[in-house]
Image (cartoon, rainbow, N blue to C red; front, side):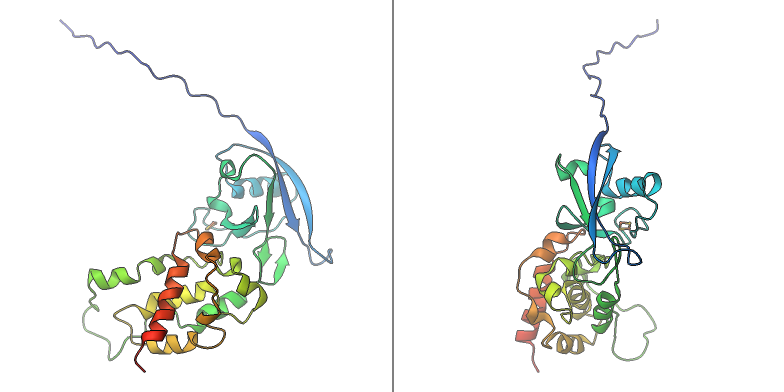
Length: 252
Ligand code: FES
């Protein structure tokens, strides 16, 4: 005799999720036409689980092909689509519409870097500060014949700061950076931290000297904006504090 399996399903059909019309207020600037940036509105039919990047693509594809913004990976890895969304720095590709409330959504370029067009800024000052802290391993002695060993404990000391994707969300959320373009900014200090505390590196003193300059780490006013803005969850302010402590307690 063939056994029969009786099942009783208690699962209810999930409620159908409908798209809604969302108003995006985007701060536009086309240098060939505009003297000043100005706000323009676009209404997009969007699902709650759509990302802001999806909506921007839709606006560009269906309403205004001149809308300009950067994006590449679309998955929070490349760091190219940091922008100010509802007044806070975020990655457009990691920001869901349902997490922004039910009102209008404002989108503008990140602050403190020269505006080039719409949501695109000139990143060169940001990368100049990054390069200045020597963000690469500088070991001592000759090339070893096998890999440079490091304990798990030593690796853990700088694990957090290896996660940076150079999106500039932290640096361009910093009020000090907004008013002082010479300040290295949080991202450059995070990059320095990653090597200063690496047991295989021999140039910590050089980097600390660079960050001891007047536009270095002491310009930080511990506002925590950088930590709040980091899409990778890096404890940026804590890393900056650790660099300050390293400067205070170093033996020179
Ligand atoms: S598009 Fe690459 S991080 Fe958002």
